[in-house]
Image 1 (cartoon, rainbow, N blue to C red):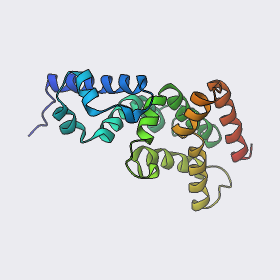
Image 2: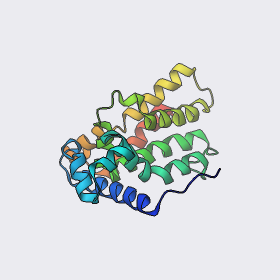
Image 3: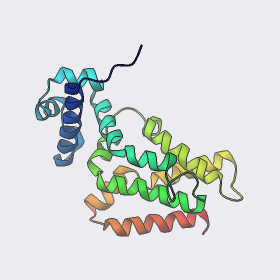
Image 4: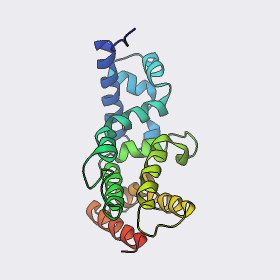
Length: 195
């Protein structure tokens, strides 16, 4: 038995919902202020469609983020340097963190919505676990790398520097120039790596 392709109208509805949610999160002062009703109305679908397809608001936010990060994940998993797996770790670790920061700068509303989704600990989220695993692997490949616990902690500490709430605080509230933030992150990563 072959798997059925999604119906054309289901694909259109999904794309309309993702686009509407993305736009509403971008325009809102806080991601919490965007309701499922708002998204359904903007997408031109029933609220029940949202719950059937995405489960809840957090599931919808995850789907929007996944749709926007697909190319980045592909580059990290199988792409060329500097993000791809064959990149030497001293080049890859800073590139990975810069890629996370650039995504959060370009999509602050989505990153904040995901962090504020109220789905428990941010450290238990699939996307966080994936980034942590990728960084841990890259850090463990450094010459003279330390034990597993140290590498895991270092990955957590580096990811803390690119949390969406910190990025929003520095850029959105304090007005820091995004390029200066990227430079500061690069300098921090060099210090952590002992360069």
